[in-house]
Image 1: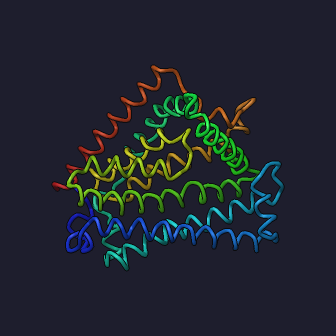
Image 2: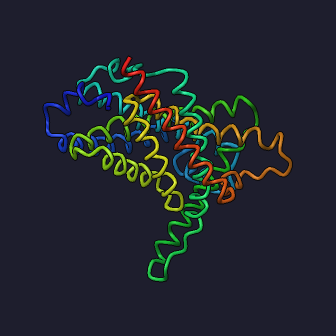
Image 3: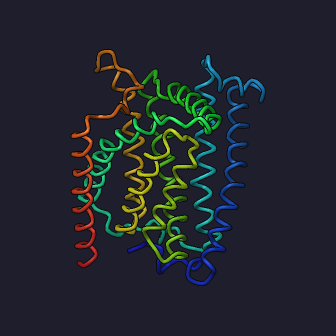
Length: 312
């Protein structure tokens, strides 16, 4: 059921909780260092000092703001997630990358089903996104609510900046930074490493999926978007659990992120009065329910196809 279950010496011969401890500790330290490296390279590339670089992240944004963000985010994410995961797999887990990135059960039909399941889930998730965005806090949590809302508004402005494309080439750059890098790096860390180790430690695949999904959602530091991210993380986790192949959740993650980039580019060109802030607006309830049932149907056939392939 799991591609690493019988191959990972770190899991088989060492305490899985010890492995999880090292994973979390190294990941946090490595991530902080990666953000520093990404910022330094962006500062040098854009030609500003550190004080000016902080001003680039605050509205009103200048022409250098987007370039700075693309460079800093792309480099820090690649180093902090993808490179970290490859290092941990090879050095800490002493596992062959070839075995890790296996092509077992990888086929055209399962890939198409994952694309359809993810798209259907996005339709359902739009309802959750709108609900989460409009949560009101009680008076005794007003301080936290104000902080979370300010953080959300700031990140929303940065998202607007990164989602406005002046050319097709710029859209392709965004597709790499927003679509491909997070899809590969985050799935390697949260599903390939964390979920695997939690499953071994707890002996409960479903608990491992949901704990990993909650950590995945919380890591993005957006309270008003945490629930839909947790649900997405769970979807990716179940895709990985039943396929045993990391490429399928990577594809699902890319579809979720990449489709948003593509819509942001083509929307203003072909839709009158296109509003990028309405992309995640909830569809009617019945459409959301249809999306959920369609997702479950596509996922059912995906599981069935994977099982048939494994028996051949």
